[in-house]
Image (cartoon, helix red, strand yellow):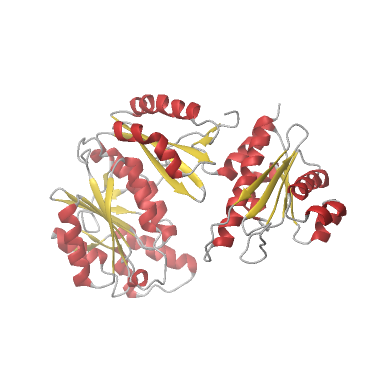
Amino acid sequence: GNRLLMGNYTMPLRGRQARRDWPPRRHNGGANSSAVHMSRFYQLKGLIPVNASAEILCIGTEILLGNIVNTNSREISCGLAELGVGVYRHTVVGDNPERLREALAAAFERSSIVITTGGLGPTYDDLSKETIAGYFGVPLELHEPSSRHLHCYFHKVGRQMTENNLKQAMMPRGCIVLENHNGTAPGAIVEGGGKTAIMLPGPPREMLPMFREQVMPYLARRSDHVLVSHSIHFFGIGESALEAQLRDEMERMENPTLAPYAKDGEVMLRVTARAHTKQEAEEMTAPVVQSLCERFSQYIYGVDVGDLQTAAVRALTEKGLKAACAESCTGGYVSKRLTDVPGCSAVFDCGVTSYANEIKERVLGVARETLARYGAVSEQTAREMADGVRRLAGADIGVSTTGVAGPGGGTEEKPVGLVYVAVSSEWYSDVKELRLGRGIETGERDYIRYIAASHALSMLLEAAAKKP
C-alpha cells in the first residue's frame, strides 16, 4: 500500500555497550577483589543452548495482595523473546524465605535461567540474595563499590544512611554485580552447575534499565545464535481473520516463524528468524516480510513503526504536513495519542473537543441546518467538523469524530457504538461509518472511544500517504 511505513529495526542493545558503566564486573569477594570484565565471558560460545529456557520469579507480598501491578514479567519476557530465550512460566511468591526457597528450587528443576525481581531492599524481609546465595552454596560478602555508591547516594540526597542500608551492598561471592543507576539496590548474576540466577530490583524504573542495558547484553553475548524479529502492523483486520489466511504458512514455517498478536483493535504479526549472524537472519526474514506486505497491503500501515499514532506523525513529518482534530465522542483521545509521540509539535496544530452542538456550530462552522436535519451523529456533521477544524487551524488535514459512546444515549436508529469518522484535505476527503457496539456493560465506552480514535489516526495516515 502507498501508506506503508518502514521503521528502522534496532536491537534494543545497540548503542548501549558504549556506556561508561558497561561492562558489569564480576565480584570475587572482599575489598581488594579484582574486577573481571564481561568480555571474557562473551568469548565463550554455546553457554546458552538454542533451546534455552528461563523462568521469571517475582518476589513481593504486595504483588500477591494486588497492591501493585506486576509489569516486570511482561517486560522481561519481551526482552528474552528478542534473544530467543523461551519463557514458560511466571511465578509470584511472597516475602517468605521457605516459600521462596521452594519456588527457586522448582524453577531450577525446569529451567537453566531464573530471573528474579524484588527482594533486594534493606529490610529484614528482603531475602532474595540470601536465598539465592544459599542455593548456590556461597556466602554473602561486602561489595565495596556498591557500599561507596550507597554512601554517595545518601550524601547527595542529604539523608543519614542507616546501618541496614549496607545490606544492599552484601553480594554473593563470585557474582557479577549489576550497577543500579536509578536507585540503591544493585542486581547480581550468579552462575554454577549449569544454572544462572539473575537478580533484579523490584521497582520498574530500576529494573528495566538494568535488564535492558546489562542483562540482555550478558545473555546475548553468551549465545551461539542471533534472533531477528520484524513486526508488521495491521489495522482493519481481526486476529482470527488474519490467522485463518496465514494458517498454512504458520504451520509449515519453522525458521522464520510467524506469530500474530492482537492489541487494542490492531494486530501485530511478528516474523522471527534464528541464525548464526544478524545478516543471515535478516536475509531470511526480508522475503517473508516483503511477501506479506504485498499480500495484505490494504491492512498494513507499517513495519517496525510501533503504533498508529507514531506512524501518522512520521507520515505527516515526511510529507511536511500539518493536522488538526475535531472530536466529539472521543473527547480529545485522537489529540492525546498524537501528542504522545515525541516531535508531534512539528505536525499537529490544534485539537477541538466539541461536545455541544453550539460549539460545533460556533467554533467549527457546522451549519445549523445540518445539525437540525441530520443530527450531531451523522456523516454530514462529521464531514463539516473535519472541514471546519482544517479551516480554523489553517492545517493541511483535518480529522473528526462524532458518535454515541454509551452506555446511554443510544436509539434504535443511532445505537451505542455508531460513530462517524471523517478526514478532510484539498486532495483527499472521506467519511466512515463505524458500528463498534459489542453489547457489553463493562468497558464498552472506553473501547468505542479508543477504536474510533484509531480509525481517525488511520484515516489521517491515509490522507498523508495520498498527498501528491
